[in-house]
Length: 432
Image (cartoon, rainbow, N blue to C red):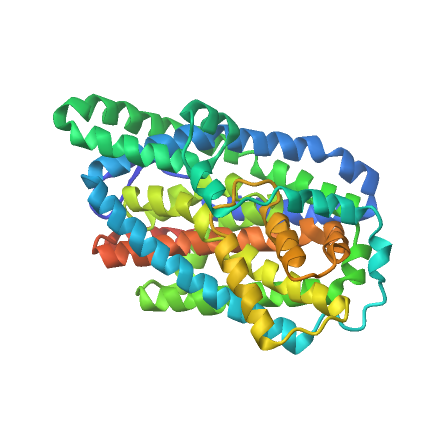
């Protein structure tokens, strides 16, 4: 049996009931924690299963993103429309990023997680050298700009460089729109490609509980709970900040955009759980594209804003970087004035845009900031042990924030489909 949206458009086969999928994911997470804790060696041995699931997801991203973005851009008509959408998205990104910084600075100064820890900075040992290696790969503004332009779209697809793929797909979609009816066969082929990729994604997502079980078991088995107790104050402050961000920014945006917050949370819980358990934004991208389009955001806005957010709207990572920088200063007993903290925020604001393609981008930016302000890199080295635990939370919030970002942009453009939103929200509510 097929399912239709509020306008009568056929959406394909009816998806499986959500409670089954969500229940399996939660059960997988709980089992993974138990197995990793009780049988750590076995948990670590399961890592290849998690890696295999991530590879299956990543193989979908390039063709799915290219096809959906080209179809969406060509449908929007021209680069002027795309530029307007991009401008509105960037305004929203910068506003939410500033709010994330404010939340992080308030919490880290109120709770001061770096005070009272008995871990000497010198105990980081060789870890400082590893962190310094990341810092040396920091890129300047021109490097970031040049890196956004692909020398080969095939190379960009092979490396999974989302920003380069967005740039090429946007220009190609505008070119297809410019040639009019002669570009229609290209659009039809790519539209069919997108539908095939969504079907393939449903097959891959059937394996999600296995992949998530293995990822959590390997993480707990390898890191254990001891490291959480050692740096528990930072972990607690970090997750409190992420929760406040979701309530204040995501909840506030939902209210301003006239979207039920609970319905939105229900809709994005699958991509959220995928991002949290795998600590990979890319793993959640295909599902995010699907659910936000079904939630009422037009394809060309979803296809542009979501990938752009992966480079310019990493607010979970932003909140982490500000918190971690002040944490290291507290750990080293280096007092920072309000002005110095404001300078740190400004540097992070300027350096955090466009670096999502860098491996461990948050750590790269963090170490560069520590170096600039004369703070010890050994402090960042200490964070390597809990980086994956922190990465799970910040990645899930990154995905949540990017999904929400598509809604106000669609509202500003006057193209958000309330009927489709209500129909999809009702479907999710009945399935819950």
